[in-house]
Image (cartoon, rainbow, N blue to C red; front, side, top):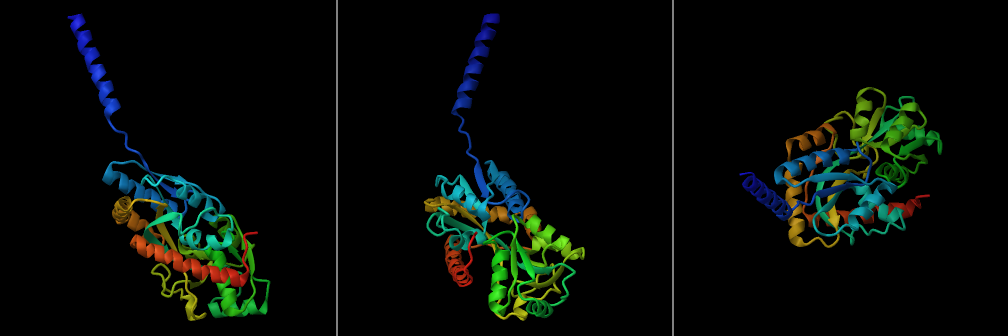
Length: 320
């Protein structure tokens, strides 16, 4: 009896090992985020990853690869194998501003990446420290003109949307500001709240709590319509005609993704982004959920690259 039991046990173990070896392991899908944890894109990607994992049963993980205003993350995405296991969620500045700012990116955002879909967009808000003597955009411009080269504005760094918005304002109004680049949005807010800088074009999700608490004063928004989160803050275009910008986020993959893989990822991302927790987070942060075809996203990247290249050349903007 003992010999029989041992034989059965041995047979069962052998079968278990064989089955375990034969069972295919699912390769995780990695979503690369070119910024540190906690930012808007990171938060959305993590909720979308949960939704994709629940739907497919395939593990989806988020990997933060911050540095050089998104360049490090873009390099990681572009160098990944085009097998559908690595994608990224990146900001518009990384795709459309960086190519004219960083001369040695080693990534062509048109040729070295596969567009998948738009994800969301949000406006920047022009906010000032309450000590600044301006309660409207017209009053701020008068203050800047009365103090040429003395009013400072902060940004997340050279090439960020906040930096370029400041350059747009100076170009459109023939004014002079002092640009103070920081290494991240948190430091921008610290500088503003502490009075080290006067103003900033900050994205609405970061600025909103401080505006609502009365610690920062919002004077204008960069989109052509007001935000539901800040209905009393007028578009900057009301005072500076033609001024328009928005920060958008898009999913991309490495160059060479097969058409079938691109279509499959596009559909999976679309479903994940419609999940209720993802939609709620986007709305709560003052953003708008968006989607697009890969072709439309490719056209958007090319169009905005040209737009920013012209401004960067005109303003002679460099990373140093």
